[in-house]
Image (tube, rainbow, N blue to C red; front, side, top):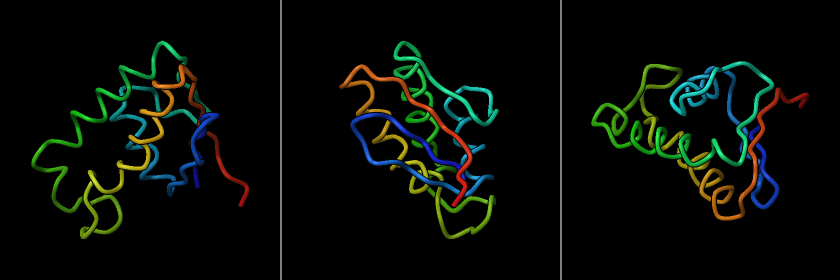
Length: 98
């Protein structure tokens, strides 16, 4: 599991493979642990938002379970990024020990 964190939003947890794909969709290296500075968050938000609007993102993906779309998987992370933009915060992600 990988956990995404910012100060004013609940943590978002994802399975490793899904999280790595989301990090790449944000336009960032999928190295864990990782971070986005306050200045990088808005671009990551735009990248992920654009990726989630494609027709292939609206249907099931082939990462783990074909019934769950990229758009559905990415929504909680997109909300976390939006909060980070509003609050001018950085975002980090790290492996969970849970």
